[in-house]
Every structure is written in structure tokens, then in C-alpha cells.
Length: 200
Image 1: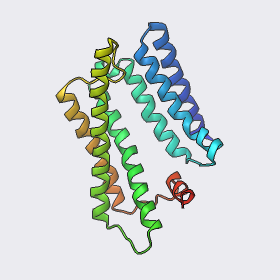
Image 2: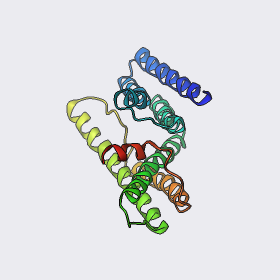
Image 3: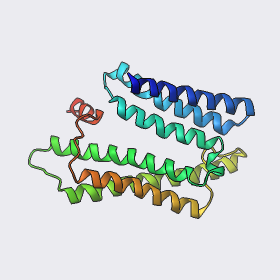
């Protein structure tokens, strides 16, 4: 109940950021806020539509990551030097955990296959870094497209140094989850298991 209340509070906070963006005429803040709020509501929608239940802790994890990004777009990304590093590290742990859960799901569904701890560590890091590179490419392409159309980009890229630092902190988040994966963290409380079983 407490965690659910925290999620609702975060959603209200994101809605307030959207209102702030609307009042200040900041289209980028509004769009990022709306997309972020939609992301926090997605688990409930999937549960209603497909019966897939996401653990409350996972939903809270996503909500915190989304809130930090949404708040960042309203100013802290440019005024607080560590904000971008924090959001990338937290988001990377989320991506890494999804990659880890999928690997364990594959392992469970493939009789006779056991993934060594060292392999899982390397896989989790590579999976997360690949996602991080894709994100940076999307930022770059988005900036070029926005410039071509004469609009402000929805995601801001501050140059090569920013990209390298983003990937560095993506790696930090990936390594944290990779180290935890060596202890064979129980992934069965994640919705990945249910999703895999539904595709069998």
C-alpha cells in the first residue's frame, strides 16, 4: 500500500511538471512529461488488457527513473551537474535488470542450458551498453531531425563529452546489476517469467 502511494505521488509530481511546462510554454517539457506519465501508467494498462502483473517495486523503480528524467528536462539537466549522471545510472540498472530477467527466462525455458555467472555478467553489461548506444543514436538523430524541421529537440544532446559520460554511467548501472547477477538473483518476481510462459 505504501509503495502504491509513492507511485501515485510520483505520478502527481509528473503531472505538476507537465502543468509547469504548459504554463511556461515549454513544449519539450510537456511532451517528455506526457510520455513519462504514460510510461508509469503502462503497467496498469497491461494488467487490465493482458493480465500481466508487474511487481509494485518494479513499477516504482520505473516511476522514479521517469520522474528524474522529467524533472531534469525542466531545468536540472543544465543546472545540476550530477543530475544526468544519476538518471543514466538508474535507468541503466533498470535496462540491465530487464536483460538479466530475459536471460534467466531463456535459461529456464531451454532444458539442458545453464548460463554461467561470468557469461551473465558480460551479457548484462553488453545488453545495457547496446541499449545505451541506441539511445544516444536516437538523441543524435532526433536533434538533426528537429533542426531540419525547425523545432526544438525533445531530447537534448550536449556534444561528444556528454555522450561519453552518458555511456560511462550506463556502464556503472550495468556493472552494478551484473555483479548482483553473479549471485543468481531470483528473477521470478519479475513479469518477465509470466510473459515468457504466455508465449510458449
